[in-house]
Image 1 (cartoon, rainbow, N blue to C red):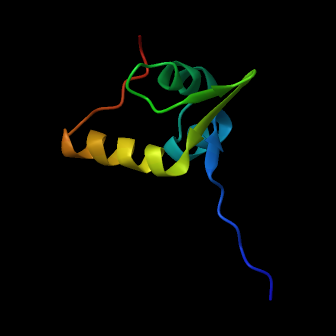
Image 2: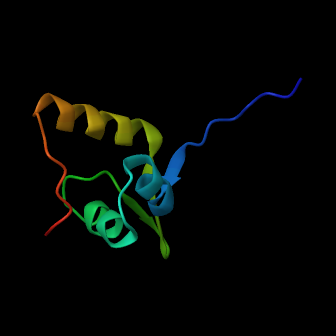
Length: 69
């Protein structure tokens, strides 16, 4: 049987789907200074492990995700 490979990175579309937010909100969120996004050429990617750490930090803060800048 083949081995399932987990993605190392999420795209902005992935983040949008995971968080259940709109496209504009997703782009505003990844543009934030505290968000772990990496720019690769014209693409924006988010390392999956860093995204999970970011979610954990927001949860510990009792955070409310706000994509406004």
